[in-house]
Length: 213
Image (cartoon, rainbow, N blue to C red; front, side, top):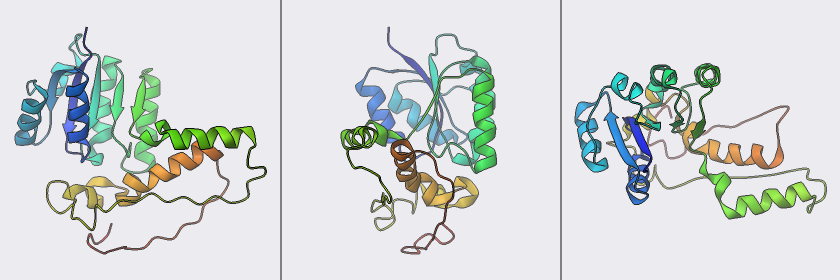
């Protein structure tokens, strides 16, 4: 029997990729909700499902889990509407609007025993897995310094000028560009090298294409 998923919010730039994966792997659409009715209808047609209220999907026993792909500012509210169903939830990263918001989401998931995943896919890539194995084996000896970068040409190519403009609007995305792409590098560093005791940082505007981000 195919996995049946409810789609809660469809505004993230990764929505097209997730749609492709779902269709390629035969994942059934248990329904689509979005606060933007036009966007909800468009994605429901692509996924082969119907537009449905969140409450309907939360109470639908045939749905195996949920994918939250909304603007980050809505994540906590959407999680709180879904956790009562006690179904697995994927929340596109960044998980929350800020630290306080993310902690509240984490507590809601833990309190309801929810199986949870977010979009840090780098851990599954072979080079990172091989590097982590070598570090754990002590292959490099005592490591005293690590440097990593993670970037793409999205700002230069105007990815966030129109449909995904909210992702460069901190009132909608919260943590802005660093939270959405920079934390991939942070996640890999923590996974491979462990926790930290102190942090320093320097932020710059880059191309300044998106002021305030």
